[in-house]
Length: 449
Ligand code: URA
Image (cartoon, rainbow, N blue to C red):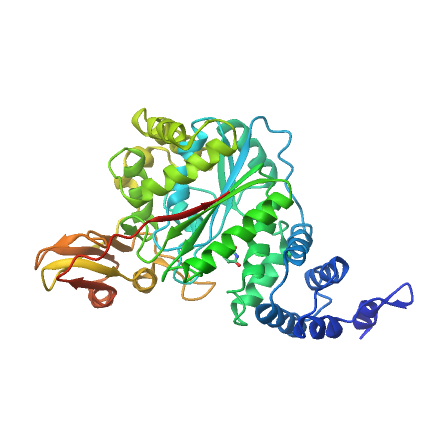
């Protein structure tokens, strides 16, 4: 009761009523900077209850926010906790974020490539969410790897090694932690101003000069249509620019998994193979595109073509793989596992999924394959679940590939024969083989600068 009184009164005067702000947004009103700050600060401090903020989020979900409101929400969230000041670190500091997908091991390839060229990559990452994987879980496949470093270690490693990927500390953007958890259970995740403020507040709090965003579109992503992905990309770029950062967004396909591996250690192995120059395809294409955006925005390359050449050279020379090993060692992992991936976790059971008919793969349901990996134990059923780092799926036939009857579509990596059999059945439901080859899909849909 005393707490409530404090909410309404500041120095004896009634300031704002949360219920009035809910009604204002519900009726399509535009909130002021002070009103938005009041909501974010009050919720972060635990003074405004979940039920009022849930109602507010639902009002935003249906009524939206204009760009000024979205910027205010982003800034209020960013200032809800600590922010990192990277200005004392030499050189350009860049950060990359993906809106989340299946088989998305981009950071494990892109970050060492770019860091080996001298751009300082300071990245905070998350754990798996639903059917989408998380970079922190993948990194823990390296024996001994520590994702929970302090702000001081974070800064020191950016300067010394040129790259860091760590978990977000509790004191960075606490508003997002609370709001995201509430959105997850109130049907309010898929709102453009809420996604923009969630992602951009974290990126701005982490202090980089250049922010590159990978906005996924398709069945395996939050943005199911290209129009929605375009709007999300444009809003994030505008908010980043208004906050004084060089911001670029790339809209990419997430109808099928990225690359071939889905599952933590399997994805790390694919990332290492890519850095060894053994894999081309959509994963490498994405790394060259995002890396090109980072190098041109940082002023290190004059054109996308020049940037691509520089990035490919980091693979040919072995510089990117060496940078990955340095990074793994700096965060307590065994660098030998970068050069010998057989040291990484390996599932005891491997079973093929043979094609039942000849033809072309015309559909590969990313969301479904993410669920197959999750059910094998590669993701979390609840927030508290442990992840089995060794399990998952390796896709052998991607959309457009020809396949003969009996040829393997994928290999399932499982803890038991029983889990493998269920995964084989699950995987079959995700693949469509047709007599006609499907129309080619453009992987990089658009770049928003
Ligand atoms: N990723 C985030 O960090 N926030 C969102 O709201 C959606 C995806």
